[in-house]
Length: 249
Image 1 (cartoon, rainbow, N blue to C red):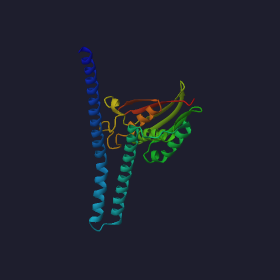
Image 2: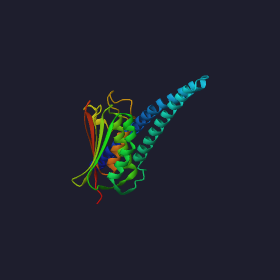
Image 3: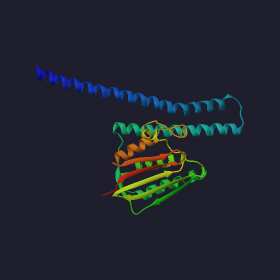
Image 4: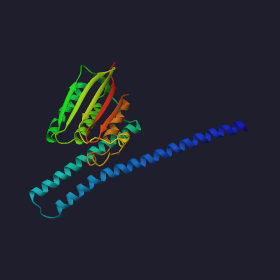
């Protein structure tokens, strides 16, 4: 019967689409688990090696201190990776409890910039902050702080000695505009379309600094706040991230 055939055909099509989505989801989950394991394997290996060396025999005080410093550094790296992974997991599952409230964007940004003052000085990088007017947004303070930390941290890590990081807050067309610009190593045009993908790390000039999770979290934060993010970059000239968020009504 033609009608029965049409109904069965539509059902089959729907079922196949559901199977395709399920297969893609399983593949994505497996890739995510594989990438996460890979990121955690390196710090775990270093911690294990340092501990074994420290226990292998009598060593001098300086050698023990060096091992402990290395273990502490890798432990902090693991903690950071796990925190980022947990945030992404909660975002995927829709389990992150958002707490939207009126926020002074200038104040939050200034606090984050000040936190990075000493770090930037140690690395020989200047960091400047400019604000314009009274800019209020309705947002989750924890997430907006994380967004700023991830972007400023990137701008410093992928910079060079004697470089600079400019952070600016503007009110443009009834949107809060955050600009974070550096004059560091830059990102190639081939890499730019993928910088917000999880675990993606750009070319070798940028490798060794991050986990490939920071920018994917930034993108998620911008999306849940119904904003927009864009990136402009050129190799050896620098990178500019622009975030636009709705102003508080």
